[in-house]
Image (cartoon, rainbow, N blue to C red; front, top):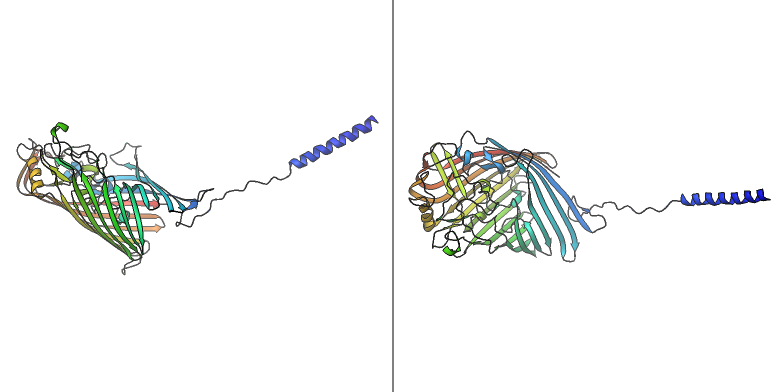
Length: 496
């Protein structure tokens, strides 16, 4: 009896164990996988961030550049130094490698699209970094919402094709420059049929401050050494710059027409010139703030009769006390507000400044203007060639010229035993003419190989001689005259 009871209980326990094991092996419903979904609302490359209604696009590029007979950004040798002097120790070529990353997010709201955008560059440039060094720059970082743009973006002064100029060189003078964006608070209103208008306040320092000279202090000589001359470092911190604090933002407005055939763009800006002191500190006093302005008009024609994809872009600008709205580009990377070049026994030089003042006096504003054009023709879908040109000019008027001449005169702040300007006529007017061409080949999508050539001519209106130290040359006297420059570049661009 006891044996029979044990068998019955053991069989029951086995059945329970088998039942438990079978229950444990039953399939359990898995959590649904959230697959990434394509977002077609804003063009190719966007997808939904899982679990949200926000679309995101991640992109970028790798850009490899080699400049010949010029500086980084394919700048002509204008800013003195070994290149401007044309001596044997100059760089015959300069290389730069850039990694670009972009992030674009967009969300549909009842107020319109909420957008954020950033563009960050990782650069390595010959002569600037150590062998494994480099630097990072934030070129664009902005938020757009309900018609507002807040952050670092293309200036509202510039046409929307400002970043699509068919050149390699950002050192090509062609009006205002937006290679790194302008901090701003802007509002855009759309009126229908492609018509829109924008009003913005923009941070002028350092992008829009061309420089201000106080003749009580020495001015950066044509070939004077100045390690702090870099544009963008701290509002053109070249020797002689007398800009004061950043008191009032620039006020910028535009009216635009965007159509299938192209665009029209008209813009104006008010620029505040805030001076430093007449002397070493506030006890010497200072001039009153001066208010300059700039105006611009631009047009783009798309898909010309010359071929599918062909385009023509034209622009003209004028600035009074607002020279950086006219003399854009990245030429200030090496020279602050100075242009200077020697060929043989001839020297040409000049300055791009917002204005000049002397002790006890007011600011004498400069006047600057430019015209530029870009034409691009597609030979085939893979091959295209552009032709572009510009003329930029700046002048200082009778009062401004007298102040600049005084600084180089006997007893002047700049004149010394090694800086002697013997001005027999003319003035400090400066003109710069440039013409260039680029040919690009796109063998596969998003891979472009291109080559560029630029001819530049500096026109100085100074007459007489200049005695001074020039990099790599003995101290001697030079005749004042016009200068020519030739430079080019090749580039490989892989975008994604």
